Amino acid sequence: MVKKSDVLKEKVKAIDFDKISTVADLVDAYKDSSVQSRALATCAMAYENALKDEARPTIILGLAGPLVAAGLRKVIADMVCYGIVDAIVTIGAIPYQDFYQARGYSHWKCSPRIDDLKLREMFIDRIYDTLVDENKFRETDAVIGKIAGDLEPRGYSSREFMQILGSHCVDDKDSILGNAYKCGVPIFVPALNDSSIGIGLTGLYVERRKKNKEFMRIDPIRDNWELTQVKILSDKTGVIYIGGGVPKNYIQQTEVIAETLGYDKGGHHYAIQITMDAPQWGGLSGCTFEEAQSWGKINRDATKSVAYVEASIGLSLMVGYVLQKGLWKKRKRLQYDWQGDTLKSLKQKTLKL
Image (cartoon, one colour):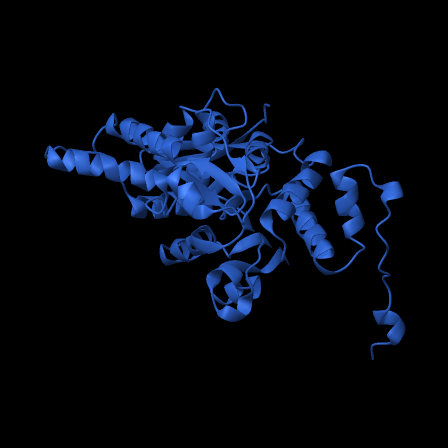
């Protein structure tokens, strides 16, 4: 029989700023607090466990939402540089806006109550309380179309194309694409058409179609196969979802694809999500990891945690905890050997910053 004393064992402790100097200190204090601060600390601890796991799980990061506009560009780039993420699946807006900034353009602060019709007259676009220059966006669209137009006319995975775009961003030390290119971290964009990158490629499509010429194209099913191979060649995997959307489902389904191809990997072994989406609406973005276990996507014994926190707050705090704790220092980087659409090997190499 459970006794009252067995339940009332751990006290909630007040957050004491006399003892807090760093982000890591703050998240440590959250471990003894309540509600979403403790949930976020639990996510940070799950991430810590994944990074310390001697089996060296492959960590796949799913990104959705206006994260570059929110100022998280360098946070994500640092995750790549410090080797605390091994592959990324994202919406198209994130690499696009990263590429836009790598070209020297900026996001600008504004009030969310600004006059949007006046903004339209000035060709300025609003992302909640952030502005971008539509003229610079269109220039960037055209540059992406030009890069694509110089490629051999064949099918490319989004991973291949992100690698090509990344090669144009290497001079920007804060670029997500540039650092992923230098570190060999693959970036997949399964819904690439649904972004300004897709707009740039549409311009190329129309131009070549008028001239009856062949052109490069994105092969989304090749993306499925390539990411699934990352899962197949990994002994264990951990997933981190920032937001939900297509990246979350795309990463989840690699487990199902692998199983249908005869590779039952037992589900992802670590699962972390920072989201504002709730489960009761039935959407994948808000679905619990327990629900995902019914599909075999998450391992039955997985370490899992969810924090219902807005991403611009939650991701920076969790990554700050990991970096300030030095949890990256003993972790080796993965080296991918891609030959066309085939991942020949997935090896570990010493991390170099």
